[in-house]
Image (cartoon, rainbow, N blue to C red; front, side):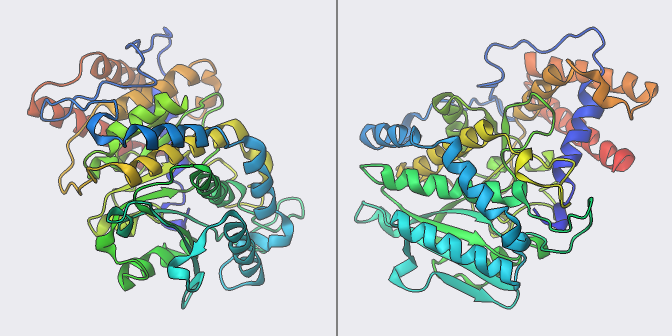
Length: 434
């Protein structure tokens, strides 16, 4: 994650603290299966089918990828995070020897798996501030293989002199973003273990210079190479996963699907299949509807369907304390399995997603907030920075969020009021606490 969004996860945490922990009576929402499959009524009153249904891949493809999903293990991911976040990688800063060493490691990993450089050409895409790594897993369908799902994560971080904590001056970036890189490697390995393959091709991209302002992904979008943007059906980005913004919260976020048709129902269905919850929250939830975000953002601004898997940033974010001990390994494995299913679904489905210019509000944002509340209420001490008046206001907010989850809005006016309410909470938290 880069400075444009440097506190997005921390802001999520503050939002949860400010909005969700004031229920002194311990009451929480109790909608059936709310943590897994929320009510998905949209702003126009329609309902999203939470099963893959007609949007999903044919059975042989689905069964094969679900089998391949079981090959993803915490130990496999941990080994790769430990390598990428080791001191000898020197923080993986772009244009420095540590970044080059990380890049060489990633190319070797991809080649050993059986990923090939795009078009059997070069592995790298150089630009003035860094070098992207690009590989391909070819699709099996004679026609659809000419289309791509782009799966990416940024591999750069801040480098060898970003601060000093007890003599440690290297920002190793374990959670930002060695975990995301390991997750992409895990998805790639599972896709190659998938005996049926996928119908569309998969473009594997490790972005450089993300920390300098999404420069690697912006360069790709502006150049339109090596795969033209109109051949990419969707972008799956993984950045800062396997983290815990509130102790005890096991779920993560799948951000940005409101800007696309067909992706939200896949996310919901895959939470059941993977047995891991990724909440399909809106981009304004963490500020990435503006200039904050990750490497999916240049693609979304180019009117392309995206989804960003994120877990929020820990307090140690962008400091030398961002070490492997912060990573929740089962959580990292869970989000990797979920991302695998979503990537494979997008590569296999007949109906590709289309970009939505004016997203409609949905109840998933409130569901995600209230799941945080239920966990966080077990330890109200984490809101010690908040005064009594803030807590009283937060209690009112929580009660209203519970009402929304239990009885979602029905009219357009009610949905507008709901979305204004959520955005107001977030804006006020940014103003008061950031």
